[in-house]
Length: 342
Image (tube, rainbow, N blue to C red):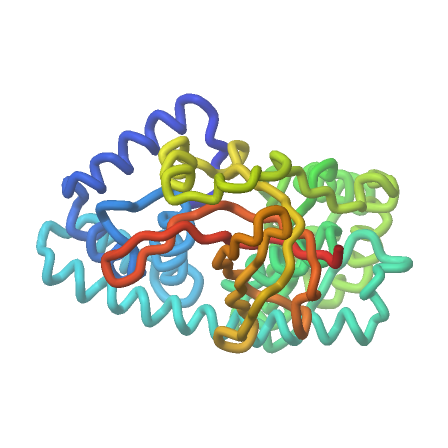
């Protein structure tokens, strides 16, 4: 759930844990969190832990008291576990609402700064006095994905220290953000008060008055260390699926080939499709019917957090072949990760 690389040892451990959960041997807290996330205990996979269980545990530490999550994991009482899981779910919803508002403000800043194409800015720093320090890492992550640039988002450390900022950084391949902060610290001693982290994520503190100077220093180091090639986002796939292979059986085989995760990503495929039908789910999600022009077969698909107003009539889609569970029935469904006109 915390993006630890799934090397051989970690895959063994995660796989063993998933089998225990599927077989009903999870502790009451894990069981309650999985159910609160509306996931199936019998069919749980690693991504369910990352998207449903982990965020509920993390939310308590971001907004309130992380001991709530610890108590949920340690209790032997299923009733108490369910109550704690419900409380964690409520906190997580508050976190999601706060994050959505902060990301919208960050995107408005990018538009105001003329950074849509990123022109002159390589290392991006963003600060808003009303932001919550516990959520800035999630904001940095969203903006990093959109801009494909290293991003640091800042907020006041807390109400008692309005003159101190807490920043959370997210990076891209080829830019070790913790080392970048160390380089800035060596060049400009005293500018950063505290920092730590690793290649892809880091945290730091500095005085609010020093923020403009830090933003310039971070952009400068990013310009030095990143060439144009590194700034181009690349999506690797396993190629096209042949006609007739978009089956529930293959989706199950892919699921069981996991656990998938950091350093061992889910297989991605890309195919040309015609958009036979689509509609909005909520405000930013698409439910699609995609027709394969090779055999005319229509495949159900979903795409989350879409920025475009509508899908193109002919498109190339990058997707995962996943299992959709609805009212006790399973079917194959495409989880679309990227779309471009064909």
